[in-house]
Image (cartoon, rainbow, N blue to C red):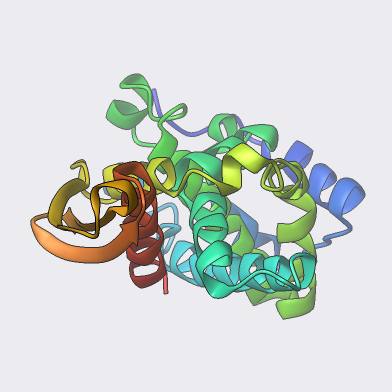
Length: 239
């Protein structure tokens, strides 16, 4: 039994893209390719030419640009240090996977038997990759303007949640999620200096990612310095 969805399963997605987002594919083969996981290629080498990995690469860049441009327009008074963690949280895997679920991409993925049976349709990385690949397919088929509009429409709820105070004020959590999604480790904060009088101390903090220095911050409280270091690291890691 194959891991592929029954014939015709792309129909609902094409209808959704056309009627909800106004995206009509000139080459629907690109949409199918966007849903082909590498495990399916391994088991069905004669069925399709390639997996969704190249489209995923293209879509990843397209999403990053669309999100950065939208944040730039939405927050005209915000400095780079505030925009960077917002962008990092919007383009991280868990966010893109949530958007993919809203499009039911998990049930449409073409998977190998083993990947399908081991929960591949619900796997966060597969879902995020699929959304990136669909965006890449839209870009390749219809160009930048259509792809940008699709990204902003599909991620509209995520953008609305990004304006909440909690979202913007917690770069440590955003950095932790980003680092965990990349290599499965956690950021490490270390105190490097304490200066000033007892009533006006200034703390200096460094944050390490995978054992390497990723950011520095200072603050009147240790937690404030850690937040500043996390913002600095996000600026570098997502820049």
